[in-house]
Image (cartoon, rainbow, N blue to C red; front, top):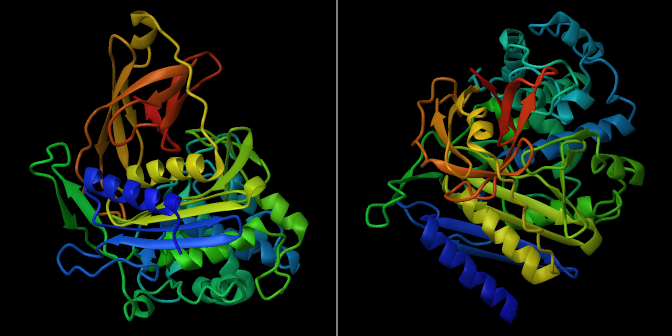
Length: 458
């Protein structure tokens, strides 16, 4: 059964799909104890099938919260401890900084504070040793910041956490995650392996080309479809909006499954959503993998994801028992799902983010920020304008495999300051994204953190 509000949501989603050239979208909402799910558009522009509530999408990094939930179950079983050095579980762990390898814990991994280069993707094959090989190669990753001091989104840290789960369970990560999380929660339409997903209706990722010219814009199938096996614990789950709402119900609850089985204690559930480390880029803090924010004075708990041409949003508001998931099959889906989540928060639960303040800087002050900033997957060229900054992202490739070529270059993004060293992108596909400038003790600019990643100023 639909309501006028659901009909308005349908219109909003279809309008956004047309504007951003996204071929397919699935939406799931939990509100006042009732679920609403719907599909829009098609799975694949080359071989189109209608998207419905049972269509499988890659949920990307929302998988990180599955990995953390599995780890917390092992913590309660006495097999893991968040603050014990990982070398207790992986004695052969090697990192470029041996002092970091001696001290790093799962807490560092789950809060993105390990400090080494986090965007490392490499295909180590489909064998059960794929993740072990990946972690062995982490020894070559440079240590960018001191352990535990700087929040910077770190995919590799979750690869390390997944390997720890394998070591203590004696199972491949996928089997452990299914036993510890997916099966108890009844997530029967969630898979790690393409071979399991392929017998169902699956969405295919797309890149939107010539997006700035409506007369030329088109969606093209993105390849490869699957991530490397070693990325399963980082972002490899394939799921439906129905299963995502089952997952949301669990994390909105007190640690019991729908069948009444106790999976986690209330204390563990609360810890996962506690502010364990200060974050940035629009995220207030990070818990045990969850990205925490605040809208209208209420805490939001979220974690979206991105794979090759598939983007997902997953957010819930504990105080309102509200959850939303949006699954999309195009690289412009990030913008679409951000707008859909914002719309739903306002229309369903009356939450509207405060309008940002604007800080006016002099030309001399703006000039200090101009320059070239480097990171693993993309660089940034920053130039000063009359009113703020212009940010040009320069893709470098490297995802989903280290030899993947760069994707399309996005248009330049205008940004203004909302506070000292705090940025807000104001227009284009990245509108609403936030960033921060991080300085050395002497005041010199060292990093620009955007999209959660730190970029070093050249």
